[in-house]
Image (cartoon, rainbow, N blue to C red; front, side):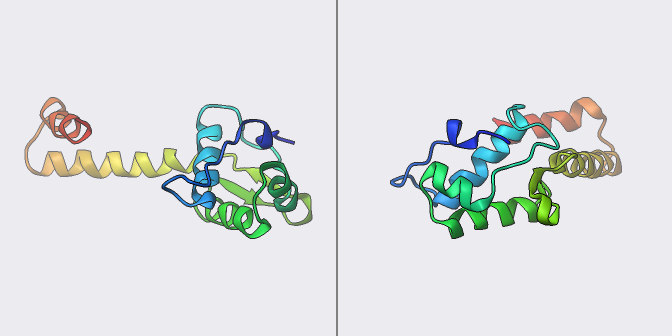
Length: 121
């Protein structure tokens, strides 16, 4: 099982709610490889004990991550990191729509990327 309690750091005085801090850190763990696809996560109760949160707070983070496709629950077997990063599909869809919109107004790749670069600056 993943040792989330070893690296999850929550700030009760932080600007975002604790469930959201946990949710974001799990996503970060998936993205940076600390939580590989197929990794079994601790039960809600176990993780709550590890990080000092209420069970309902951890349950909400897990629920939201499951809804987003980051985690999957396999009944009595537990909760696992999903095998597919939902960001891949979402970004591929967005990129395709962006490229199609650029083509419709007569922009080439270089011109279209200027708009994308400007959004990130």
